[in-house]
Structures are given as C-alpha cells and as structure tokens.
Length: 169
Image (cartoon, rainbow, N blue to C red):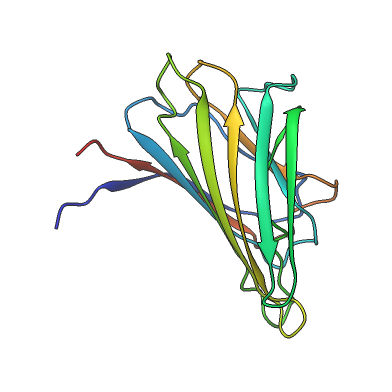
C-alpha cells in the first residue's frame, strides 16, 4: 500500500498557549489534515484563521450531538471559522479529538473548504460528537493556519497538534 500522508509538522505544547499556528505551509500536496488532541482543553468551540486573515471572510455550519440532544449553528461573514464542537476531556480521561480536512488548500482559483469532526471525551455526561463544514472566501493558497479557542482561554500543556499533507495519487 502506498503511503499518501506526510507529516508536515507536529507540536506538543509545553505550557498553556492561546493558539497553535502552522506556518510556511508548502503548496506541494493536494489536501491537508490536522489532528488535535487536547490534554484536557477548556470547554470551548474552536476557531480557525488562515494567512492572518481577520476579515469577515469565513462561514460555517456545525452540528453536535450526545445521544440524547442535538444542536446546530450557522455563522456567516464571520472573522473566524468555527470548528464543530467542544473538544475536551478530563485529567483522568483526556480523549477528545478534532480532525480537520482542508480540501484544495493550495488552489488559487477556488474558495477553501474545511470539513471537521470531533469526538468529546470526559466520561458520562460529557460525551458527544460534532461535524462541520466551513468556507474561507479567498482564492489565496493556505500557507498559514491558526487554531484557537473561540471563547478565549488557552490550550493546556500537553495538547498535541499534527498537520499532514496528502500526496497526489
């Protein structure tokens, strides 16, 4: 089986940080995948910005569910792209995860689409899943990704974020 994913960069936070940035992203892949595991992280939705763009160029729709209740939200003309759900765990059970897929990130003729999936750990009463689709209304290639808690606060020490490039088939 051919290897199609290359690890571009990975970081494990040694101290609390307000956000995680991957920069100088080469345009040599077809798509990108980011995997984030909090340790545990605060209960917050997460947000993305690309290439330091803080303009009202982002839209997204997301859904969450925990087996008994559901919710959804939509944001248009926002200054950030929200990730689907709160990802958190507890010190005893830090097993939330966020997976983001960035399609055609280096294409300079189309807007950029991101698909996100989350699973929420933390024990009974704190379990759930989320999914979202986001749009960055820019034809610029993504060369920098900034991930941060949308409600403020920090990622805790021990949070791991890894960015992969998907090779052309």
